[in-house]
Image (cartoon, rainbow, N blue to C red; front, side, top):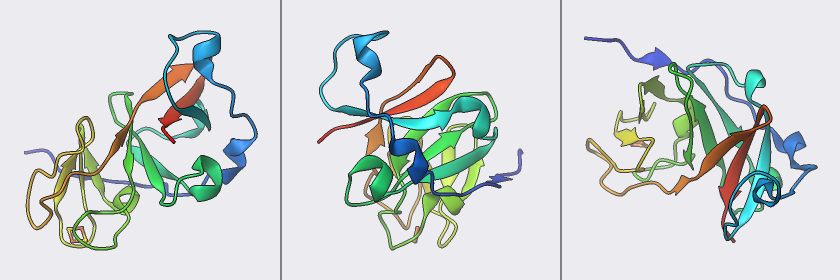
Length: 140
Ligand code: FES
């Protein structure tokens, strides 16, 4: 059995809001929504998460950007669907995060609630890495 890796970094990155250019214009197919620059990929430690707050995304609620141990990036709502807890402060293993309060697990790929007490999925957000920067698609 592999132990859960405690997420070691949790910091708002609202300063990443200066550039709201759509990376699809240069490198990707056109996609509805707005791409938010979450900063350099190298600035987000492996096996950790950062929070993008409302100032960064324009959304009402914060979202959490995870960088898994195998180098993948995933983004989901930061707030647990069971109660008010930050999933970015939880425990990360592979593509699953465990809520730090009551230990419900969520799939980072689909947002599905995998274990009780949560039963409702969190929303997921497409993520791309372009020219060393992590971009998150925030639909309006
Ligand atoms: S607050 Fe997340 S499982 Fe209860």
